[in-house]
Image (cartoon, rainbow, N blue to C red; front, top):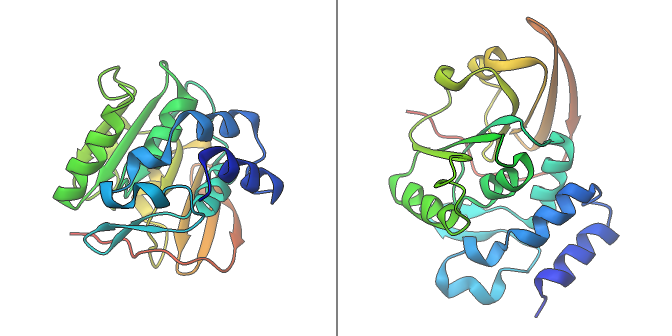
Length: 208
């Protein structure tokens, strides 16, 4: 069976993980802490795994690819929508550090509980680095806006207007739209640079 080290090595070798800060976060935040008990021995397979309620913990390759696109940095404030198992939120928390903040949203109550419990293993909630909310963030969360980065783990038909609004000028958003990953850089109050990467598969973003 693959190990955490062999998974990281493969992701680096295949060019999905490149940035030292991200490689370090993958080493420190153990995917096995974010999968259901009965799937622990599959935690280091490079594939999505079910976490219940028709949701998955994303494939490590996809998470690495999206986080490399997001380029999170220390001290930033990041909105993470569709937090699910909490793995991506914890990786982000590891990167932004004690002066940064990750605002995580999950709308399925049972998964909120699961995700919150997993992130708590690393004391990120206790330290105030992660705030974990149970609810629908498809209309944004203006209380903590503006955000340096916004990431979503579920696919929508389009980028929600509220997220564009709540992104800082100079900020970046990464999310799945249909089967593509879209990257938006906000270069003016309502001006964006857009890039698209094709050929991915995600669970749909559900809103209330």
